[in-house]
Image (cartoon, rainbow, N blue to C red; front, top):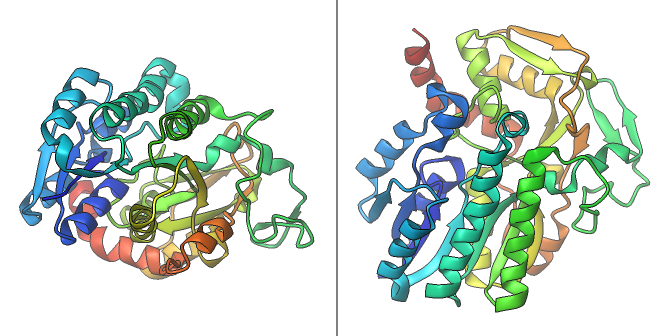
Length: 357
């Protein structure tokens, strides 16, 4: 039986990958040690999602292993090597603010952990597609220097600009403020490309916008839409940081992202790079997202506003999906923001209220 190795397998994207590829008849090997609870506390733990996977997915084997432990990774890859058909790397430290608190842990997880997985792939299954969940933060704050226009409820780009359909892969990753998180992900992103260029491994970096969906353990420092809906439901206070709440993000549902992974798996390339997100089909400002949440939950969000924005935070970011769509014309966005939020609400409301009692 073909094996798919998925890191961060109890997280948002990892668990979606587990379900998708096991449904194709693959045996999925998950690597996840619930570092999310270490980063963000018990409310962000993914153990609830792991229990659900283990009870529902028959062809799933879980390893409680830290991706920084190269020796244990090597044992796993050595055991399955002749059957490994796909490696999906989603495990990461994902927060700007947290990275500044503990740069060593951030870099060791994001950069060194990625290096360990690439080297294990090189040694044991070098022809296997390696999919890396990168980030739009590799571009740093350069998007903030685009010609932006302030509208009533959102920021937008000048419609005459070449990025009017979204930011493409030709944006520089240099000469900008990345945050330490962004810097560690740049290191990982370049490593993934280099293992493709230098060793011929079929690698890809998906530079994601906001990745979201109902399996997200949203928390204050990470998980925009899930955490926003959670606060709306529970009444927990929420803070908007800067830009009059008009900052814009594109949001891609986890299943749409996994569908993109699948297309690459079927037709892989070498050292590919794609911007991936909701694009023009699924994006919102903070104010627009709040309005959606309040409408869906029939409750008002308890929020406050501060003029001080997070350092390096994007004012406007929408992904240009043209490059990926051109190579993989069968792929498209299925979920827009209201659809995403309704699903997050429906699948998590009861659990959130029980946890908050």
